[in-house]
Length: 258
Image (cartoon, rainbow, N blue to C red):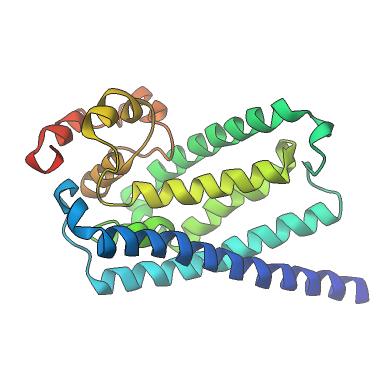
């Protein structure tokens, strides 16, 4: 009984620490990006807007509320992972020499591909009319995605998103550096795809980056049309399974993108 109490106490302390870290990360990265581009640099980027209505404070507040709720479960996932590592149950490791330096890069790319695949199929399932209201409506509640929207998930969706990382540490050997790198990539990528405008010049995005990777243009179209662009990082599954918007490149010929 005492052992169980100590385990729960440690889990609770881990959760509290990770909940705080996740919140700070969210407000620093999402909030800082929003402030920089929408306030400090707003006029310089307004002409790059992607045809969506401007976000209202009510929508931003709702996004923040959902993001804080999501952080509650994400913190629990992180606490479970670290607790399982302490007991030796995961495949996480700390010594680079255990698998070699080359494996850090290979495992990083492998996790991104697996996460993108997982995300594509659950995201597409979320848009099923029978599931949308219960699993994904909160993320689309705001008419205009902003950096604040990047982690605004209904709790069931947050659970499914977080379980990917809980599962992956039992399936693939990962250095802690790799796991942290994936989490930071996911955070920054989510913020960038919810900017509401494209950072890159239209010629660069259309001719190279946008052919292979999901950007703000892809995701803004998704927020308008709902039935296209379900990917997280890559355009592979959308193109393979016919959910890539055939009119995607026309976004770059509109007056606001030139």
